[in-house]
Image 1 (cartoon, helix red, strand yellow):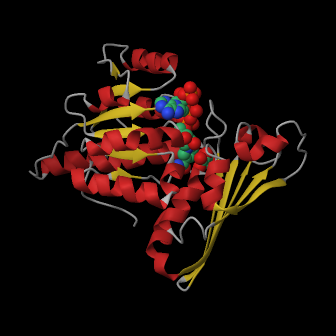
Image 2 (cartoon, rainbow, N blue to C red):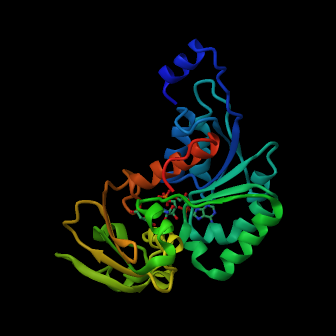
Image 3 (cartoon, rainbow, N blue to C red):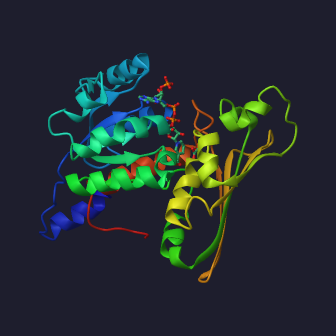
Amino acid sequence: MNSDFFNDLRESGVQEVVPEQVNVGLIGCGSMGSELARAVQRGEAGSAKIIGLFDEYQPGRTALANELGSNGNSKPVEAETVSDLVNQPNLDLVIECASQAAVVAHAETVLSAGKSMLVMSSGAMISPDFMRTVSAMAEKSGASIYIPSGAVGGIDALRASKALLKEVTIVSTKKPISLTGAPGFADWEDKEITQATVIYEGSATEAVGLFPANVNVAATVSMAGIGPDATKVRVVADPNSPGNVHEINAVSKAGKFSFRFENMPHETNPKTSFLAVLAAIETLRSICEPGLRIGT
Ligand SMILES: NC(=O)C1=CN([C@@H]2O[C@H](COP(=O)(O)OP(=O)(O)OC[C@H]3O[C@@H](n4cnc5c(N)ncnc54)[C@H](OP(=O)(O)O)[C@@H]3O)[C@@H](O)[C@H]2O)C=CC1
Ligand SMILES: O=C([O-])CC(=O)C(=O)O
């Protein structure tokens, strides 16, 4: 919050409300998790504090714990399991920045303990059965599940017009290097791609399994809007793509919407857009500062 704003409040005699610290456990200490943790430490996510870390890649977890604990700062606990993470005293929220598999493996442990969860690998939530199970668990334990907009925007408009939507398409274009390792890219790994090439066309339901580290955005778009079976996805490999580009087109009885995001890839993981990290930080900040909400 702008410091002039608080100065004005003080001068006018209104007392500043100090928000309570929100204690966070992080699953996934890779590109996004590390960047998010650094932003939290710089105070960019309100009153959040990272108190524990878990990553199946132990050196990554240790490196981040040491970095956060340097310069006299308190070092987060390195949890050996997600249960250990969840059992940290006063933990409020678990942030997942790992993989769809991590969400499937650990959501139950987190939510049944009454801890809220912010999910970045939103593709895991696309299965209606899984979504029903975890939502019921959260409802029972009083926890919340947060799914940030991630590497796209326009989620607010899709949510608002949900009942009136007739058609939603998302086209995700990335450089071939950003698609490597995806099951849906297996047939292309050894081929030279010299121009924009459609790699996949189908539903969001199928796309998130074929490109688990590339089209979580399609899952988020589909859950906000017309649903995963009806949301059409196209994945394009283009060596000349200006970045990770996502284009969303929606036709509804409320109008036609088009959104285009030409995202800068993250420095250490070109599959992930930097905007997705910013979206995670902003969601966390808004959890820490309940009150004013801008956008749907
Ligand atoms: N919603 C959205 O819009 C977006 C979502 N994403 C998703 O966010 C997630 C994080 O992205 P990013 O940080 O770039 O990915 P990285 O690969 O850089 O980091 C992920 C880290 O999590 C670890 N990990 C993976 N699976 C598990 C698990 N089951 N349990 C514990 N740790 C695990 C990885 O270890 P190891 O390397 O050993 O597997 C790695 O250290 C990804 O799933 C990505 O697809 C990304 C961009 C946009
Ligand atoms: O960051 C992006 O551009 C999109 C992405 O990887 C995802 O949705 O999984």
